[in-house]
Length: 241
Ligand code: ADP
Image (cartoon, rainbow, N blue to C red):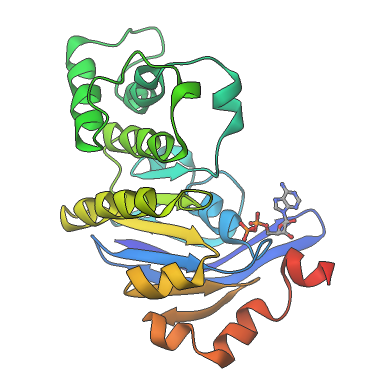
């Protein structure tokens, strides 16, 4: 249902990612691991069409040419500080997921508001519509972004470092949510540099550093040799040393 073939991304002269190929079944919950600068965000941006790429991305059998073809994919960026500077409410953030269903001049309908309320309830944020984003904890903010993906009715959700900087109970709470979504058929890819977490909670890991270094269960992907290949060279961390 998600097929990534020979995907490569260049930023000017710099080849950030090359020859990435993998496929994902509906409802899989996958960790994308790699050090800072390894290309995890770049991979997500390529999948959802935010950066130009080589190779192909197919979602639910649709060969994606531009962003419109990728409406089934929701990308939840690393903590989005722009949203926090701009004083919007939880309802406005989550309601933005409905925009694809109406023309730019049309206002949100009662049906849209119902969908938003339902999405908020499913991430345990019922009644938060009128709160400002700035009032939310890190975990609540992540859940609000997931609610936006739900209102978009995305079948593939890409979460960039969603679990960074959140405490243990929040990680568990977010994970419970990811597992519920995955059981309901949503595919989730979660970028993380937390290897202990990847080992503990995921059944499949993609190791990325400039290209795909490993793909399989944590025991296999987090073996010493593969970790060396993933964390030992390339990436901004390695360049800094
Ligand atoms: P990760 O998400 O694993 O930390 P990124 O995908 O953000 O890695 O970055 C991969 C590489 O591409 C890094 O070397 C980074 O500096 C570079 N990079 C990312 N975004 C841009 C950009 N917009 N322009 C130029 N280089 C970029």
